[in-house]
Image (cartoon, rainbow, N blue to C red):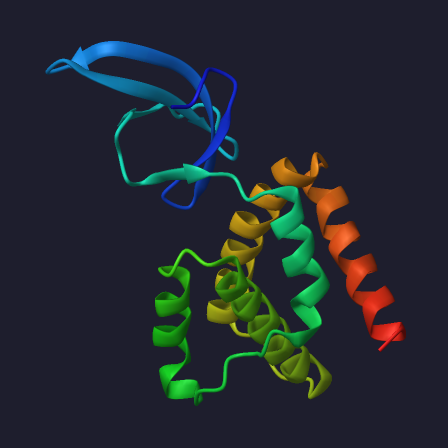
Length: 163
């Protein structure tokens, strides 16, 4: 059971447990959660919900960050790319968010280098995946989101140089 002040992931959103209501509805205890990215919202979730999980550990976050260079980009044609993004979003795996970030970034970089219009769809998936991944990693690493982004970039660059 979580306690007030703990961070958890509810569905895809990182939330802080701000209250616990005992026997709130039909004798079931509920967590009152506040999403990090929208503190005006309060989410009530039964304490036995399967839609809540622990924040990633600092060790696991660092393992994933160190391995980003080895995570493959998505290899499907343009016609099926959005379905693949949706599928990967729903797995709940951090590595799949990295795949989305990597793929969308590289696809838009290719467009930019070719002086073509950037894809709004790729930009949207890139921003969503970054938001979910960096928000959770920032809590695990005890950094701001901007510090987390920079830490990831620095780690990738250092690993790339030493490869």
